[in-house]
Image (cartoon, rainbow, N blue to C red):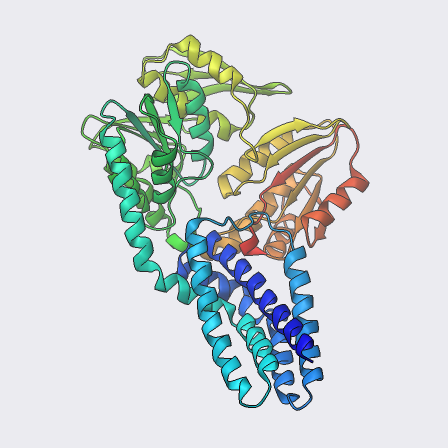
Length: 528
């Protein structure tokens, strides 16, 4: 009986540890912010998941059978084993990264759970049910594990603030020791990561350049880049600046003090947290407002909420690909071919500069235009700019085009789809007339009250651009299908699947040489 007690307790505790790790992964994906984690809990209904409800029912049933210890322990053991298998076999697109911060939260969660389990064990000794009390308590904590991650994160808030303050001052000291460093800030609802990569490639023809890697676009991500990657011999530091709420970009600017600021777009992205596009505009322009009087703002007038924002605190260079009226730099004669794109940049004095690139899509031309203007501002010779543009590699998952050995063209636009970017991706798909044009998509997210409306418009655009639409998951299915079916122009054959694995299986039955597949967006784990 003692062995049975130990096995049941270990299984229940193991199940709890696995769930704690999953809770931490979701907290990490919600930027360690309790309010965002709570929003995800409400939207996902994770607090009432089947696993939690079944475990709760088993825990209560086991309590009622304490007089028969073997039955109680058997209930708990089976349930805990099933939970462990389900949690360990599940694959995540963005698995938990065990940073020092995660370890601190994890340890506090375990300590809180240990206190409760130890208390239960103490009470269990009085009735000779120690093993049952431990295993049942661990299973009950599993049911309410989200409370533990919230409490642990809250308890550690002063600690994290103190640690972050130290890191912040370290980063400030490093930057102060590099007075000649040219710092460029890039922000926008979309396009900022691609623009960062393109600018890095072009400026590297003349300067020693460091850019924030990956999606290190928060204050702490920038601080980490400065402390771990920035070198004393770097000439230029390109800082991508992301934002989830007002003040986020100003916080980064107060640290790095950029002299050049690029605003790639202001659009309907993250409306769930910003609520209005005016708030998005105000936040993105925190970069421009933070520039010194001798700084330069380079902004994209193709977007209404960029074009209508006055800038009079610094030199302002406006650029555009489609709306040329107020722009001083424009792109024209854009021609897409099987090998990439050619286009012409028209400068303020009317000079026309021809470029070719392996990239495709109007959005990439726009991002290149911002990078070219910045390079010209920093006196990079035009031939070096032209050479770099011609040799720029596609950024993974951002309108990345490749051909398979079987003759199928893949357009990978799986990163963070948005209304403007998805339209541009569909424009590229529409031009691919060699075979069937297929889109695989779960739709767009974080669009607030306009979520359904904008995904319906997305569906209408799919109808006129694709021959086959494979809609993944339930999140936006109804809106997209409605848009496709009610479109006035074109019609796409619709297939609905529950996962990307199902989509791949379906594709294997319909793809032929000459076909083109567009992967538009890939929802993160928080939207599953």
